[in-house]
Figure 1: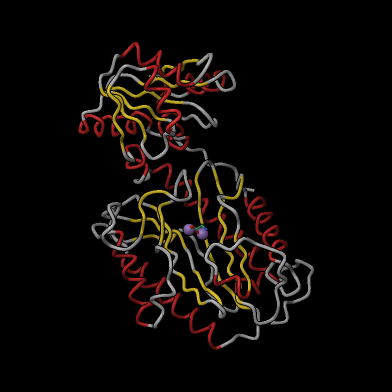
Figure 2: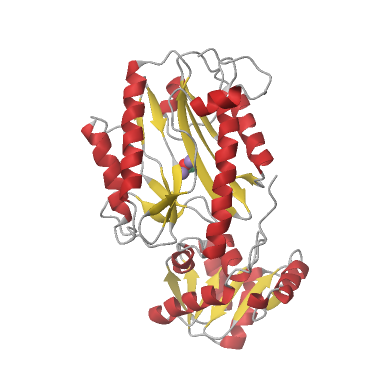
Length: 391
Ligand code: GLY
Ligand code: MN
Ligand code: MN
């Protein structure tokens, strides 16, 4: 199992400065950060509950008694976190935020509109006599561009996911249920060094493969089934995500037709990734390819999503015309995962993770794309001690 790499310290100060610049542009004097991935990104805090109060000159981390010792130790041990005031909230995080606010008297206080609950917002409003402002994706915008250390971690995670994928594909055999295969996938993730799955593993066989986000069930894999395996892992806090579709022989012509179209769409989308284009152009490349094969209606989701501290983050790679369409920049990491789903026939999805580089992109995951699952076949015969799949 690979050790976590000896990472240089995350550039906390630069991250905070980027957030402060955005806040200044919005006319916001202080930002209350409560979204856990943002707490980790800005404050190195990975507990389940806490808050940051960020002003132009200070940053306070407010935690409860469960986390105070570790948060203080971490801040003391890290050059980039020495500026952090780590404060215990004896009664509630909201009261802790309010007492930190009282020191600053910030007039306009931003909250993270996408994650702040109404209940919490109401409590904060009752405790803090300031003007509240809803902000959108302030920290998320900074997180969208990965720094050197993050890229190294995600490269390593993608290598580990690719190795786990070969093991996972080898577990796809007739006679096994979807849940049994999902268990094998998750064992492979653990063996590869992931701390946990990045989301609920998808194993969708036969008619279930036509459901993009099917849950694994008791259905037993049989000859002729198409099988979609979609899984990911969390490594050092960062998520990677991969899908392969295989067919247990005998292959059918109709399934191969869908597979070939999705494989073409996946290649076409990756081929256009470079800085300066809109994320939606990647979606268009995939969508046009599928439309040319008569599968426009069968592609029922976006082409991809950003990856990082969350498995679904910015940038969204979807149709043009959405407010969240981003221009691609070096350092963005996202999935490319076109699919086509035909009820009664089956579905195909192929997913890889890409990094936008200065001149194009680097595909971080590396697993054969083969309907017969050649990657799986080589795994199958690598001493796992089971019968060949018979396909
Ligand atoms: N199943 C999660 C994803 O691929 O986005
Ligand atoms: Mn996926
Ligand atoms: Mn995905």
